[in-house]
Length: 169
Ligand SMILES: CC(C)(COP(=O)(O)OP(=O)(O)OC[C@H]1O[C@@H](n2cnc3c(N)ncnc32)[C@H](O)[C@@H]1OP(=O)(O)O)[C@@H](O)C(=O)NCCC(=O)NCCS
Image 1 (cartoon, rainbow, N blue to C red):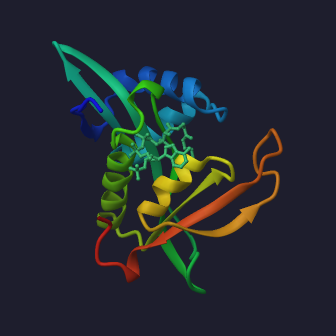
Image 2 (cartoon, rainbow, N blue to C red):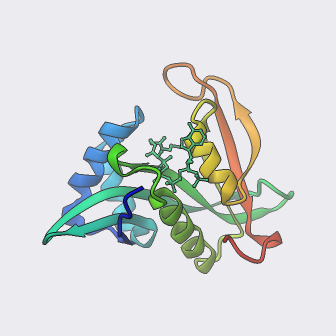
């Protein structure tokens, strides 16, 4: 497999259009542009892109958009700060090169630094590549939401507890 060098960093405002395009191409869950700008404004440190520089051309190959919430823990009867991965996608031609893993890993590390005790996300029950990726990062299925998606598909809620793991590697 060809080695692709990429760099994971915070998104720049002028790159939101690239993120929106990747979102439209990769997922049926297409948020409004305002929703992306809201996350850029409020949680810019958790809005990451994977950028590839080749022959002086820069390509945004993937993104992850997340936020910090305060709510009931998925692991204990207490209220906690928890990270919520809202959306992640990698352009098809750049998949299976570790980009999704790097975006997730950096996101989780930043969430921990922001004081989150755990993180969670929703994923289609048939989205095997994504479920595989999240399991590699120690996420476990904690719930199934019937007909969560507009086309009727169920979602798994998957979560990772930062309190009982030393690292995410
Ligand atoms: C999920 C997604 C972001 C992963 O990005 P990526 O850059 O391909 O991720 P990585 O290369 O880091 O890892 C992909 C893993 O999935 C595995 N995989 C690929 N296809 C698979 C399949 N059909 N079933 C199970 N695992 C699969 C790969 O083997 C790899 O695991 P490995 O490293 O153990 O071999 C990407 O597939 C994507 O953009 N999908 C469309 C959007 C989407 O579904 N987003 C998630 C919404 S919750």
